Length: 346
Image (cartoon, rainbow, N blue to C red; front, side, top):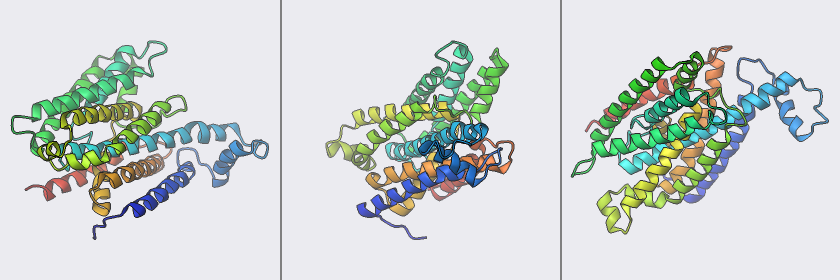
């Protein structure tokens, strides 16, 4: 395969094409699921939002399946896929480690543990049960990332091997703590919520709980894209970046806070979905190059499109049951991770 180095015009065209593909994929993925719907029924539901009088006879259950269940789910999959892929790309630049992503660095596991703890402790408190997992996941993601950096860094800096091994260690500890939370949960409903959610699922997407992921991706994604040039400089090394006038410490703190917010909210919304942040950035860099001003927007769009269709496949493969989306991403990402380890063994 040949590596291409896209210029700014080609990257803009690619982004427009990808955005159009996402818009087209939303109604196409609405066909797939436990309920067998025809193309006409799906498009009638979307048409009813444009011309209610023309499609007034549409059945209420079909409308609810498409508009109240599958469309919010598609939007959430777009946010989660784009957010995790973006975090993976920025983490790889921040750590100068090609295998860094929210899953391998233990950030997602930390978010999962704190979100599970929030569900277990405060799931019954009226009015805040939907907010606490997001707050807990953000705290867990932030603390996990800080721990990985602190433990893996010595006076000579942090090596790639140290970062990965520390991340794996933090991930194992957080996974064990999550199991401990499940063991002591005092409600079967809470246990089911934590277990189902920890495997990765977008089934809980509704109009009233997708606003936060959308806002976090828009604001966090814009912030990271604005700092794309700084990421290019940071990828050269801390000493070089400092010589070039970059305040490395301040930038790292801002990036860590933003990455923690995005990862925490996405994990709280969809559970642990691993390897999206590992696969997508590598594919993008292979074809487009390493310039973050070009790769970050494309990474968001490719990650969104990828998870949108992975979720559709997860609904279709074992219908009328549903395969946890984290299972599919792990089946794809596991071999990819091993391949990267082999290629980067030196």
